[in-house]
Length: 432
Image (cartoon, rainbow, N blue to C red; front, side):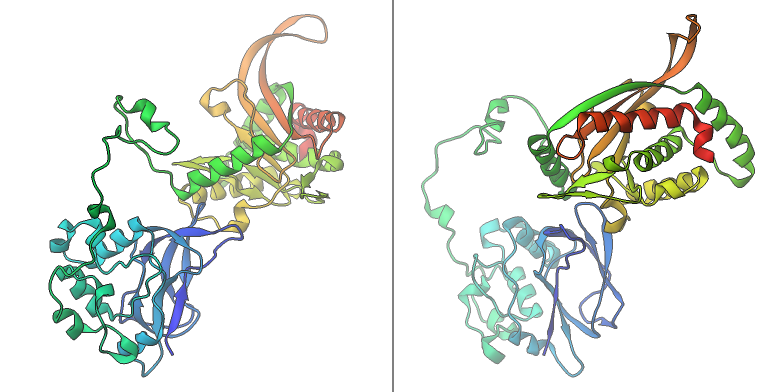
């Protein structure tokens, strides 16, 4: 019996994905563990392996198709001795959304069929219709503009085969409901149900579709600001001792091709602070608070079209050079969307550093279920009054701790930020 290959759930939160690339084609033999396709989730591009052996009998979802729901049939695997005719026993997947159907038909059909209307584009059937047809019959139908739902199959189990399509009249399609309706009154271009686009109908603009990552970011951050009671704590941190120690360490580490960044020190300082103030090392779990024992620190990494927050697990136990190497690796793979879900999910605390962009200070949005996030600004030389009452120049970095008040109270948040400040202003203590 043919085996349906379903769109996999590659992360706990995945509901749909993009079938970015097929690594096999119809007729290819595959074994368990062979790579079948590359699947894009909202966060990463991951390889999808075969769990059975056999021959790829049919591919139902074309490469590049977006919004493919988890558990949709994307291909069919034939066992030894089975033929394409046996595919009639397998129900075709539910029709894809209009855009997917058009993409799939265009990918399979020659250029001659590209001029047909979307309503007549075979072999897409109207919602709810199950079409049993061989891949060859589908291609011929696409060539000739034949709607498969108008045909009766003569193959096994009523399956539509080549002869059925060749005997049909070219262009035999069901009339479009839309074409039978009178023309609607003209409406402004680019309008939608919200009316937002109508406000800009007379302005020149480019419409940018949202990919899965941007949709997820929008949903999560909107949820965070609406449901998390944020409060903000701000401190200025003097970096002179840290900058001097960093220069000294980098001189010694140059032979190992290691260069510590200020961000590496910040990660270490936060990881240690979560150990020094353990009640703040916590997350919101709906009806309870979970206090973590290790310091799992997430760090925001900007990529094209969005951001990742890869997590440095057990950061309190790692040396600065180890944190630096791991962070560079995670950032590089984040930018190519090659992180596994377990590498960017979890953690109790996050760091967002915009200092390298010249930002003095800002307030970051908490990434649920984290209890807090530290927004880091640039280190800037400023005049200060020292302990002796004298004015001197120092390198000052402004930070803001955004805190979930359900998890961390004001006094506890202040303790956490004070511990971070002390670690950064006494950097030698982090090497002990």
